[in-house]
Length: 76
Image 1: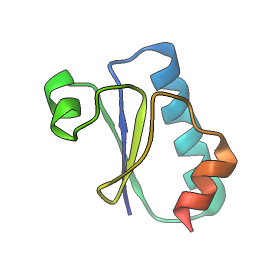
Image 2 (image 1 turned 30 degrees about the vertical axis):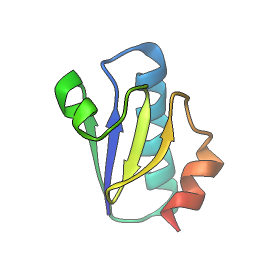
Image 3 (image 1 turned 90 degrees about the vertical axis):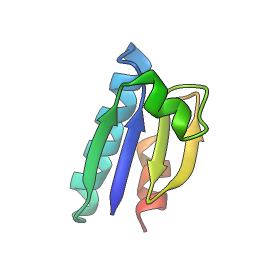
């Protein structure tokens, strides 16, 4: 599973990455979590709000920090 957390490094983006990493660890799944901070790369995903979460190429959330329960649901 490939997970990308898109965001320039703001507090919400940092929190979103933390929530995603905690959910992956709690779920016990094998996944790569990558933080993407480059604005041009973020725009390349068609995302114009941050933070954004992308799992296996699918945009799951844009513009807010997900709850851990939401991320757990996406990981199933």
